Amino acid sequence: MRLPLLLLLLVRGVTDSQVLEGEVPAEGRFFDVPFEIPPGTVELEVRHESLEGGTILDWGLEDPHGFRGYGGGNPESALVGERAASRSYLAGPLPPGTWRVTVGKAKVGATPAHYRIEILAHTQATLPPQPERRPYQPVPALSAEARWYAGDLHVHSRESGDARPPLDEIATFARGRGLDFVVLSEHNTTSTLDFLGDAQARHPGVLLVPGIEYTTYQGHANALGATGYVRPRVNEGLSLDEAVAAFRAQGALFSINHPTYDVGDLCIGCAWRLAVPPGGVDAIEVANGGWEKLGRLFSEGALAYWDWLLAQGHHTVAVGGSDDHRAGVDLDFTQSPLGSPTTLVFARELSVAALLDGIRQGRTVVKLQGPEDPMVVLDSDVPPTGDTVLAERARLHARVTGARGHQVRFVHNGVRLPLVDVDSDDFTLTREVSAPARGEDRFRVEVWVNAHPRSVTSHLWVTRSADQRGTPGPVPPDEPASACGCGAAPGAGGGLLLLLLWGPRRRGVSTGPGRPTRAG
Image 1 (cartoon, rainbow, N blue to C red):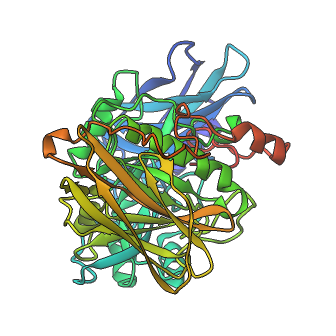
Image 2 (tube, rainbow, N blue to C red):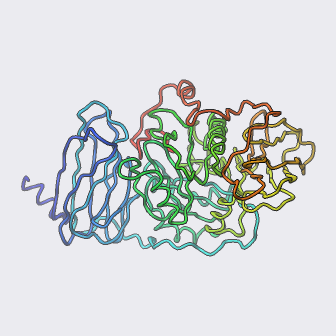
Image 3 (cartoon, rainbow, N blue to C red):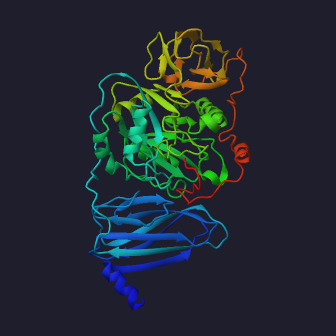
C-alpha cells in the first residue's frame, strides 16, 4: 500500500483494508466471499462491483452469527455500524471473526465474469447515530371494530434497493387513498422493522405491517407478517417447502407474487417458476401494480394460475398489491400507485394478528384498480367454518355495492357463469348450491366493469364433511368453460406481448435481484 493512501485511511479511522477479487463461479446461483474483521471495528464498509457490464450481481452480508443485511443491487456501498447502518442493513455490535459477502448471480453475461469487493474496517463511525431504530414490537390494535379493512399488501420503502420513499411518505399517501393498512415488503431484508415503531407513532391512522418479499430467481413471494430473514437460496441448500415452513413458524403467511409477470430481463425472476409445495401456499396475487395501464393481461393470467392451484385442492386466498416503489410519485407507465389494487380483509380489529387471521380464513376481496371500485361480499345462509360451508345444500348470496350499471357473476370450480346486470346501488345475487357427492366445490364472485373483472372475492368451499376438504369437486358438465384460461399451465402469461409493446427500455442500476427497471 502506498504511503499517502495509508495516511488517508488512518485519518479516516480505517485499521484494515482488504480487496477481494475473483471469478464468478460457474455453478449455482449464489456464492459467498468470506473475510475477517479485527477486534475494535465499530463500522464496516463494503464496496462491491461486477467487473463485466453484462453481468448483474446482488449483494448481501452475514456476520459470524448470521444475517446483517441484503442490498441486492444497491448502487452505494454497504455501511454497518454499532448504532447506524445504510439502507437494507442492520445496525448492532460488530463481532470480530469471519464475515461473508453473500452474492447472487442475477445474470451472468460473457464468461468468465469477475467481481471486486473492497472491505474497510473503521474504528471511527462515519454514519450519524440512528436513535429512531428500535426492536420491532406489534402495536395495539388501531381499531377494535370488526369490519372490512382496506389495505395494500405489497409496498416497498427505501429499504428496498430499487425503491425511493421513506415510511412517512408511504403512510401519508396510503391515508390519502383511504387505506387502513400497508404491508412493507422489502426484498430479502428485515431492516425496515427497526423503523416501524418510530413511523407508526407519527401515523396512528394507518397500520404499518411487517413483511418480506422473498425474492428468488425463480419467483417472488410475500411473507406477510414476517419478522425473520430466510435465505433466498431455493434449491441450493434450502427447499421451497423449508422456506415456507420457516416463514410460517414466525406466524407469517406465504403469498405468491405476480405469478405470470414474465418480461425477461426487465424483471429477472418475477414470473413464478417454482413447484408449489404439497401443502400449497396461503395466498396469491391475482392483481399486481400496473393493472390500470397494462395489467389486464397479467390479471387474467394470475386468475388462471390461481384457478389452476385451486383445482389441485389448495385453499389459496386471493390478495392484491400495488408493488409501489415510489409512494405514488413519478410513476412510469408500467406502475400503479399505492392502493391500486386494494385488498379488503374482514378482521376482528385493526391489528397485524387480526389481519393475518382474516386472510387465513379467506375473508378477502381484491379491488383491481383501487378503493373506489365496487364492493362485493360473498356469504352463505349456512355459516361457514373459516372458508368452508359444511352442508349438503346452502344458499350463497353476493351483496354488491357501488356497481349500478355494471355486471356480476359467480364462478363455480373455475367456470365463469353468466353475467347478471346490476340494477341498483345495493344489489344481491343468490345461488342455490349442493355439495358434490365427493370432494368440495368452490365459488367466488366477480364484479365486471367495461368487460373486465374489477372486484374479485376469495372462495367459499362447499362440502358434505370436513374430511372431503382438499379434494376438488368436478367441473360442472352443464356449465361451459369460459375464456378464463382455467386449465392453463402454470406460468402462462402475456409477457412476450408486453415486451413487444414496450419496445426497448432503458437499463438502470441492477436492483435486487436483477431488476434493471422494475421490481416485483
